[in-house]
View 1 (cartoon, chains in turn yellow, blue):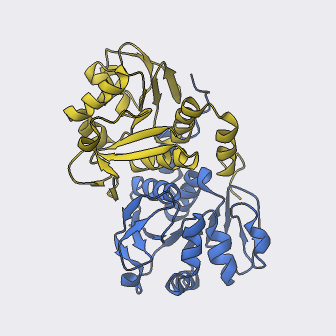
View 2 (cartoon, helix red, strand yellow; view 1 turned 180 degrees about the vertical axis):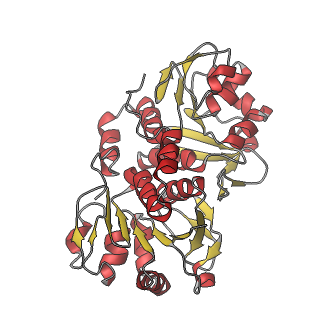
View 3 (tube, helix red, strand yellow; view 1 turned 135 degrees about the horizontal axis):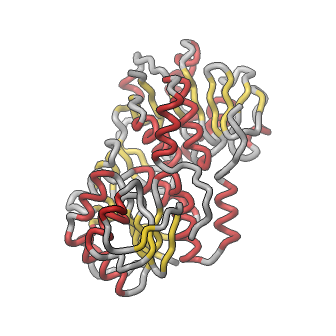
Length: 190
Length: 190
């Protein structure tokens, strides 16, 4: 079974995290929710306390198939300020495992620390203007090698689906699940 | 400030709940997260423990402007089996406050207890076949008077936006927020 990790720091964008966890778990992809602090109770951007499965420091030797970094104004700043998070990303990137930032994480966590390494990526807003490393591409989800980035909250389902596809290759199962949850039904409200 | 409540029972669909909370809080609409059990720590459909703000039993005299019921296979069954939840819905419906079920909650919680009262609604899957009360309408979001129902997880942003619009009437602010989070960007993945 494919095994992924999502990194939660105080102020993480809760819906970006939860949509991704929910969608991957629906597809039987394992997700470890990791707290980037000692306390497993991490408080989100809009003030919801959630419990992580493990602390990041307890999985320093585990190699995941994909690691996911949600945004959130303070969340991505807190991820970027944590040397353990940067080491975790470098270790997975060196092993060619999927590195998947969403929203501000692409610029603030990877871009600010030369972790994009010249690859194509997307992030939210105009944060790309502060990034010298990497080529900004204005699309909902951008893939370049083992880097999968997403623009923001509103594209979180596409972001999760892209990660799932790279992990399983099972387009039929992913499309079934997107349809099952009624994603992108286009009729106006009654 | 408009004040809403979202009801969490064990097995609640976490992304349906969190998307709605997140979107409403972004629009400065107050959301009380209520645990429909004594313990404020409620475990979601895909096994994420979250902390509610209050227990449902502690707000038996509070009248909210809107009450929101997420789905989840076990979540909606647990809501429907809780007499306190049914009394809470009846009290708000009688006061013409917004009653907002998502996914299976429309059929399982309201439909199974004659709380649709002949109104138009939507719910997930074929659950409507077991509902004698109410008129099923196959659209992402259906409004009939003070009842706002949504079909499922993939339309949770539209559902939240419909609730926000009924509470604030501020289409400009809601559209700005939908655009700000890049909702419904249609470009394919790079």
